[in-house]
Amino acid sequence: MEDVMRRKGWSAEKWAREARTSPTNITRVSKQHYVPNSYTLAMLGMAAGEPPPLLPDSRLKLTRQLPIYGAGELRAVTEGDRKLAAPRDNGRRSMTLVSIDAPSHWVGAIVTTDSMNAAGIQIGDELVVDLLAPPAHGQIVACTRLNFNDVSPMVYAPPYLIPQSTNPEWKPVNRSDWLIFGVCKQVHRALP
Image 1: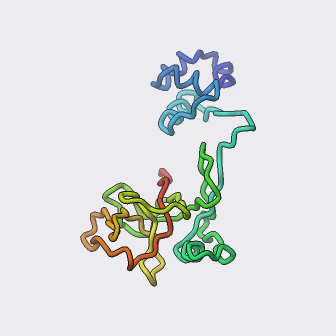
Image 2: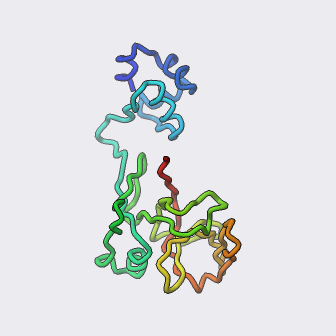
Image 3: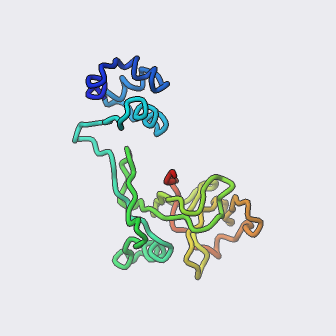
């Protein structure tokens, strides 16, 4: 951050004004106490005309690659057969998480149904799924119908899974008819 300000001849206040954010955001990032949200990062980058370098300290791990699994691979992982569970080959074999210390039992999955489109989770979105966390009432889980190969996020409300969809074909379903892969921790969407 200081490099950008030095090259531009800007103070934190000037950069903040240009980016329409608080100078405190820039100061906290510079002192490595804070990672701003993606909107603030975008505004800082647009104002500077370059992406701001965030935390140059190599001791801090900023990213982690997660393998992206399809329903078949998730089924194998869920059933304990990690050797058979190779990441899906769809051109997107992994996803990068920024600023997160993701445990090894977190994986990526691509949503293949419109089960939660009314809640903002769309077909093609990437889910970060915790394979080991037991789901709690009200959490969103990644799951599939038995004998199907889809990845559907649903709200866990035992004994049901509740969709939040604009598609009238989606109705609450009995959890026993579905395989839950894990609890959804994050949703990622590629912007056009």
